[in-house]
Image: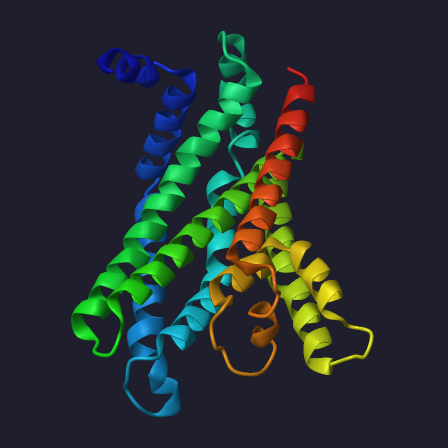
Length: 282
């Protein structure tokens, strides 16, 4: 067992992951993202009711709906900003050529970077929203402990999957870009299209209640955007009232089907990233 752990520590994937984690910590990205997630989570949970002119803790279904609505704007942006220079940045600095000269496969380099960035995003998301869950159970009354823990666990898990999806989008941009400035502009454009434009158009279609919009078509449109899948994963089975969010809770796929759809995005993007990296000339 100790031999296996020692071999794992010497694995090229783990070594590259450690380097990415150290770089993120050195740049204070981890701390910066943790603070944003924590402030976001605590504000929505404990001060969200101030908009209605009162101070009270929300019902758990309303809280999950509010957290996922806010987090869907922040998590994709943070994930792409942490990963956009993974390749183009190293290329500009000349370290990518040095890395490729070592006896490493391109798959190991890609997996190492994904593991490192995934760990950073996973730790920040888990610490921020996990602390909120503990605080809510400690202070709040009327919350069922098991149900609350299950919903927050589902929320944290789906948030990590969303982050990995957009880390991979960042890699694709980084592999195709020739300069860091162009990579930044492209990830901002992707964030704008996926998080704002597509989401707004879909909600407009749903609220318009057009006759040709059936549930299978809604499900198809949800699959085309990981941010909408993320919303559906977090409000599935919850009573979120009327309005556009109610359609995310009525996909009929259940949490398992939604997780499979999100995993399909991750696997597909990994395949695209690897293909582009493999064809990239030295």
